Structures are given as structure tokens and as C-alpha cells.
Image (cartoon, rainbow, N blue to C red; front, top):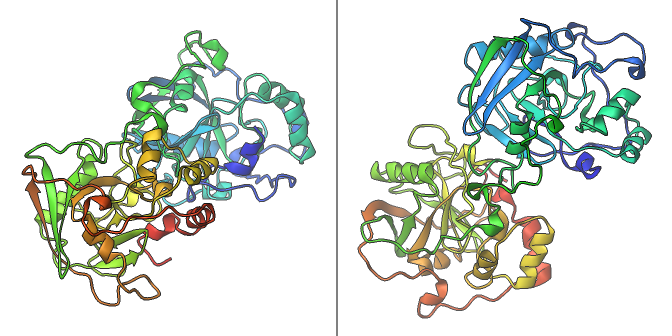
Length: 518
């Protein structure tokens, strides 16, 4: 459990961050407008999370698609600005239709960002507000609080609901030895109901779930992207409404839910990536939509599309291609043994937009991996920033030992994916962070030839590699050549050494696909 202290914080503008020091007591920001306590020790302050609401007190009703209804008690007496902000946004319908964009099992579920990236949203008053903290409210399981970007003065619309874990008494004593001020009452809660004690004093807690905590605990188990903790399938907030407490039963603790099974396995549609079949090289049916890309001085490249796994990504690419968007553009970024990148009208890596204007969220799907020949969207930090830029993977072939090393770094691969990466090659460390929507089935030798072109210090080809045209057609039953070994005269790839694999994992990071210079 203590590893969480070094691994995760709830941040609005960064998807993952760390504490600067476990041994240093976090500063508690006190705001008189937010019901902060007097100068008495926190040890003498009574915890209010589980105090019963009065009849007709304002409560929150949150309906989550495919899961059910969650009800939350509010604490205006301790977090007046935080409650006012949330109630005001909810009354405007701000949260309706948004998603929980970040989910971490045994920690929390986070939502409230209109962009779905963890970087958007604003308060009722526009921009950010200071919500403060109050020692009467702690991060017990079921607590509702605001995400922030390094201070409660940066609260906006994003919020999280705590799940956490049940701490042992020894763990609480360890936290105390690091300087955390945990009262005996808080200790009793954290060792029975559970929560995340190391967040206390750093975030504005303003509510507590009293009905539907089992739903929150169920959501925390969904399968997520390894790169950004985003659910593989959207968890949608259908509505957030303001109601009055009418004497409903109070079920504060997960133990109050008799039907909740803590050991239940995720449903089939949320299987972890290592149990999902890879579909990059699945059969194309005659009449399926395919893309034909003519590259000046090189030839024609054809790739299949996967609308069943990347519907928005396919729709966007087809729409842009049919409008002639890509005709005449260049591959502005080329890195040997990695990928070739194009689709930017500015040719700088900083331009382009989707068919709808701006960016869109293409998501990811574990059925598609970064095998050699995979076609995916570049992004600037998450799949919610997909636009027109795309890349085609070349990568390298890895040994089984190399891939096991990646697993040790936290990457998840199925046996099928490992077989593909150790024979066809690719870029395994990118899986789960980018929207893959196609796979080259003819002309992969051309892609491998282009990757060898001479480039400058910005990885831009010295001589332009021009996309003459991109056309949408239908598959006609012609020969399919998925692998570079299918092309006569192509040199076989050789596995990289363990040392090279580790260097590649460190150096060829997600930053390679940012739509800005690195």
C-alpha cells in the first residue's frame, strides 16, 4: 500500500505524478472561506465524513450508464466553496455525458473533465478556485474531492471518488513516522473502512457516498490503458442532479453491501490486455473499406481499417481522405527502426485537425497492437488529442527475453502479442497510449524503405517524402502481405540485444508522437 505514496497523486494537468518526499509533511492549505478549523490539533477534531444528513439537506444523485445510481452527502459547513461549485455546475448540466477518464484500482475513480484527458474543465466561475481543506473531512473510502494541479487553489470541475485500501495499524504508524497527522479516530476509519490517508490536507474533500459505494468499487476494476489509466470502454456519467435527502438508508461502508463481491472477476468486455486476441492480421473481407496511399517516387501502400475497434479513428481518416486533406502532404518525421509520421499540413509536427475541427478522442482497444505496419494517430499526451497526424510503425524484432524485460517494467502482453513482436516486430512500449486504426497489407516494403531516408536533427527527411494521394476504396481480394518477410529481396530483421531493448524503452518514449517538437 505504501508504494502508492510514491506512485500516484490526483492531478488535473498531469496524468501521473509523485510526492516530492514521503518524509516531509505536506503543507495544509487553510482557507477561511472553506470552513477551516481553528488552531486546535487535528487529533482533537471529530471526523464528519459519516455524520448523517438532515431531512431536506442537499444531496447529489449521480447516474452512471450501465452501472446504476450513486448518492452523495455534501458538507457545506466544511467546504462551502467546493459544494457551491459542484452544485452550480450540476444544475447547469455540466457533468451530464462526461466520463470517468482515469481509474486506478484500490485508489480512486476520476471524472468531470469535458475533454476527457485530465487537462480540461473549469469552475462555476470560470478558471480555478480555492477550495481549501478541513480536518473534519478525510479521504475515507467513498469520499468525494476535487482533483488539483498542486494546490487547492487550482480546483476546477474535475473530481474523484476514493476507494483506497484498508490499512494495517503498522502502516498508519509508518505514515505518522513520515509526519502525517492522523488522529486516532481517523486511524480507526482507515483500518476498518479504508481509504487513502496520504492525500489528507492536499485536496478539497466536500462529499461522502452514502448509497452506491458498491458501484464505485465495481468501476475501479475496469480494464484501463496502461499508459494513462483511462478505461478501455467509456464509463459515462449520464446525469448529475441536485436533490433533497428524504431519510434514505445510509450505507457508508462497502461492508454494508451484501451483494458486493470483492473477488469478482471483470466481465468479458473488460478483459485485461493479456487475455484479448490480437486482430491486426485478421482476414479482410471482400468489399471492406481500405486505404490506398500513393507516395511519390516510392509507390503504393495499402492498409486495412478496423471500424469495429476504432470507429471514430476510422471515420476521421476516411472523412479527411475523401476531402483530399492528405493529398500533397509529406512524411515530416522519420525514425529508422521506429516509424514514419505524416498528416500535418504545416509539415512541422504542430499542425492539423480532425474532420470535425480540433481534436477528438479515438481511444484505444487491446485487440490492436503496435506491430510492424500498424497505422495509428499521433497525439500530444492522450488519445483525446488525436487530429490528422498519423504514423506507420516499422519498429524492431524483439526476443522473448526482451519482452519479458518489458513486462518487468509493467507492460502487459498476451502470448500472441509476444509471438508477433518476436517475429514480425513493432514498438511494444506504445501499446495502450495511441489510437491504432489500420494495418498495412501491401507495400510494407515501401514503408521500410522510407524509414532509411536521410533526415536532419529534427528527424525531418532532407528531401521531401510526398504523399501524392490518399484514396478510400474496397478490398478486391488481392494478395495480402502483412509481414516484411513476405516481400522478396527484403533483408530479415535481427533481434535487438537486451541492452538495446532497455535503451529503446527509455529513449523512444511517447514523446515521439507528440504534435510538437521534442
